[in-house]
Amino acid sequence: MFKKSLLVLLCSFSAYAQAGFDVITLGSKGGIQDGNLTAFLIKDTHDTHDTNYVTLDAGTVVNGLIVADEKQAFKDIKLPKDSPYTKVGYVLREKIKGYLISHAHLDHLAGMIITSPDDSRKYIYGLPSVNGTITETYFNWQAWPNFGNRGQGYQLGKYQYRDLSAQKWLPIKDTYLHAKALPLSHAGIESSAFLIKNNHKQVMVYLGDTGADSVEQSDHLNSLWSTLAPYIKNKQLKGIMIETSFTNKVPERSLYGHLTPKLLLEELAVLEYKAGGKGSLTGLPIVITHIKYSLLKNIDPQSIIKQQLNAGNTFGVTFHFPVQGERFIL
Image 1 (cartoon, one colour):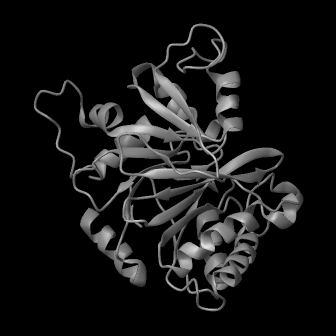
Image 2: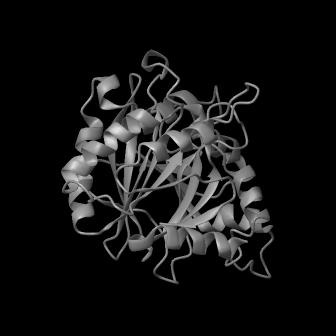
């Protein structure tokens, strides 16, 4: 089943089948479904010597590792005979080398916070504003002990902060990956998009929570699309991971800094224009994240969002909807 899902994804991504990034879904949902909140592992696919991961957000960590292990997502990782840990413990402590946190809302970092007492030393990568909020709001000896190397009270120093910017690629320690962060607008707070680059100059982008420029009265997505356009023209962009939290039924005044299929399609039209016009996005993988769980009867937001996106897909992109524990390739 695991091999089949990888093959299906590679075939469906056609021209993008020469993959650059290995992704494991620790959590796929936004909002209230604790145990399955936004978090992905990512590593380079090219170099067999690089078996280490970094997370894209960390809403769910240990529960996501358990589900991924049950689905054989870590089949290629061999547990050393002398390791005192389970496979889940070994991946957490030895193979995950850092956390990329897009913004400091709880559903994007709760897993990291809860895991911290049993975690190994790692790096937290984010915009200065995001790292500042983590320091002030969570690791402050009031909400939680200070496991960082900044902030209030005694600093336990298990986590070390690395501030990202849009101007400079920063290497992710103990991996073959580099990262940049560009700001996004999320209902009055600064969220971020991470550009990830491997040693083969292949790039992917992961967006934290974001509203559309037209709703947020922002230019952040427009700026991001301008940044991505050259990578698309040079066939270097391997995929976009972006939220679509709500169906088109939700009015713009109630989105609180999120996207709908309608708004995402409008943004993709801007990207297509910047990337060279009609046909420039054909085959590009678009991974849809952060769909909100619904408590209403007979409502499946993912099915509705999938239908609405496919109905408006005039770009030839491939939409993918990850599920917890799934491993896929970009």
